[in-house]
Length: 136
Image 1 (cartoon, rainbow, N blue to C red):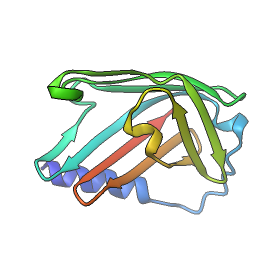
Image 2 (cartoon, one colour; image 1 turned 90 degrees about the horizontal axis):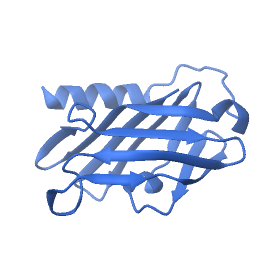
Image 3 (cartoon, rainbow, N blue to C red; image 1 turned 90 degrees about the vertical axis):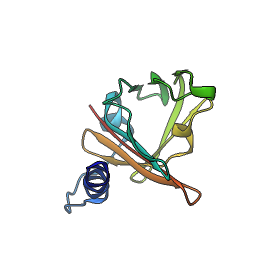
């Protein structure tokens, strides 16, 4: 079942509909919440939202951002990961990247910008996949 969930999320992230949406700093600014935050590796699939995790980001039109990443049991030695996501964001074309002091995987991802939505699907090496879908 978890594999099917991951495949469904992957299909959602990679889906394009030919929408003429043109992202700008102004129309991408706003408050985002993760509806999907999934990791998959050789040990299985983790649905962090179902486990009580959260990722919230507020993107300001001046390029600054704030927010929080919380993953229960997702930190070092099985402790909780609770990170302040304050920093900056950059839009280039249809890609949004984040820079913040907190050392999390989020700043290593390229998010595809769409109307009221940011989505990332990234492999770290051969064994870890991260899928995040944020919506306004």
